[in-house]
Image (tube, rainbow, N blue to C red; front, top):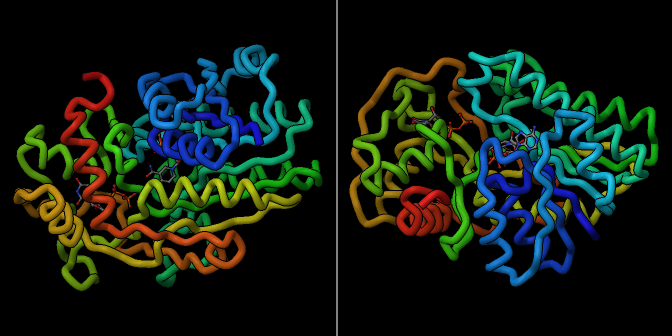
Length: 337
Ligand code: NAD
Ligand code: UDP
């Protein structure tokens, strides 16, 4: 397959590009580099020995994206492009809705015009809101009690893709609901490179470990969880990347939803301990107030993906900490060093 990766220079996109190339597929990356670097793509080329055509364009801009892709051939799409900072989405709702919704609308029209009928979309466990039960399967209610425009934009995108498929029955779309992606390629050459202060737990811990930040603030220790801190299902980004390849290779007309997670929950303090062991140093932390909008616990029931995609996670939280540390310690300034 020749796969267009929108947002393919980003954290998950770059790892997926690598796995697709290693599986013998071709990839084309479209990115506006608003939250990523060309260096990520260059390093995927270096790791795989393959060339990746790169198109720099804003997918949410219909004219720009249509012109940029006019001469580019592809037969399937993985749509990663979008803005993802939850707190920023609360402060800048119109920007988040514009980018995250318009990019999907432009892409769907473009795919239909071109007859490209295979789409994998980056959704999120955030669509489940505050879980009614854990672990959550795909039948868990979605769109109830979502607390931020980022989450709503994922929920709306899922609906937009379903409606587009009703109007265009040949379209095969897979909505992948990611749990918490962490880790890096084991080479330490590519990884997560957040700009500014990391929002997410593992990149924050990694920056504490490397000495860029003094301590971690643990957001809340009175949740109804075994140690009182929030529980999440952390999935190694290489497992996640493999999930995309499995989904793409099995795509059929219709819309299918899969959880991509490990099925195991870990608390904030468990992640702190695991990272400390991987890095061979203490991770200083303080207990801070709970973060608004956070839920106590989310854990995937990944059975549907395990069975239908013949995919499962093979890497542990310890593996993710080791690989994240390899990336962070070799690239303390990310790709800009
Ligand atoms: P990322 O920010 O590293 O990657 C997104 C990429 O999209 C970046 O390279 C960015 O420059 C690009 N982009 C943004 N707006 C664009 C536009 N208008 N046109 C073209 N390119 C644009 O994020 P990521 O962690 O790799 O996430 C990829 C996708 O997965 C996103 O849709 C995100 O919402 C979703 N997701 C991420 C997580 C997570 O925790 N990382 C969890 C669930 C879902
Ligand atoms: N968290 C924390 N300190 C931080 C960042 C995150 O204690 O600096 C906690 C957060 O409250 C949640 C877990 O770590 O319980 C995972 O948060 P993250 O933002 O990585 O992912 P989320 O599940 O919120 O999307």
